[in-house]
Image (cartoon, rainbow, N blue to C red; front, side, top):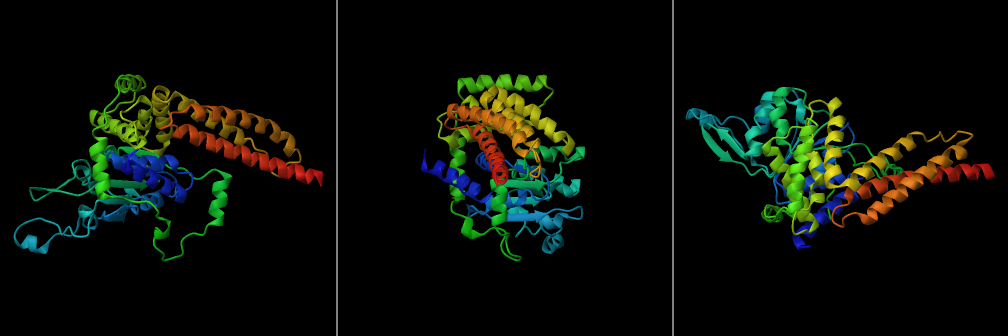
Length: 394
């Protein structure tokens, strides 16, 4: 493990200390940064999508940050700058780019899909080729990564091209564990008028030089023979389920696997590193189709690249179904009803613990996450049972 890789791992650890139950979105944001890709976080209001992005960006030192909340009334001048009056006097259609998105290395477009299609589609070449075309001239832009955050997916087919520019499309749900809710209750929100990110919480950073050096190393990561064969098998399996992936997206998705292998300190990309491709290969327009699209791709990708992780996700789902049967705290028969739930959760927890022990040292995140959630749920029910028994003994 090099010092450079250690800095990115420290960044991930720092973010996980600040953001509760956000391990996988944090990991994917870092992998996107390492692979030169863009990210769109999707989820209900109040799930800390924008906060996650701001916390991440606050830890990239030396980068110019630019943020904009988009609405249906947003006009091009707000993103790309006003027309230059001096330029118009010389019959040139140019913009004053100082202080705009065009000069930023790191960008957040909040409520991404609220803006008009004409505004959003103006971002196409900027995001993909990192250039801005103006008055017949092509100008490079310094953009490293563009983040989108939204509680909706685009439903207009005219936005499909821009939707395709976001390689990582990551759903973000609310916190579930009792410990996380307790932490939220203990902590105070930021006071009105305070900065969106407290500098006191930033203990690990990376700079522009770190990112560019990491790019040079990630781009050199070779694929193992098993990973090459697995990619062909994966493409065939996706096609058989009707999942179509363009050549450009496929190549970019494999870069996420390269970034994952590099971050783990591996010398080449192994098959299990490609499990992160799920978040680049699913596709849907509209929130109603999102869950099904993700589930289909996740089942195929994990089934091939990380079969134990797929089994862990299924076990987590089974545990959550048990949690839905949790009796009310004032149920007079609470202890008796909790007993079978506790026994079943314990069996799932122990099964997951066994899988954690067998997981690859450099990539068992999905398994550990599932085990952690089930362990929290089991502890939650155990405490509930103990409180009920204490009341009975009194």
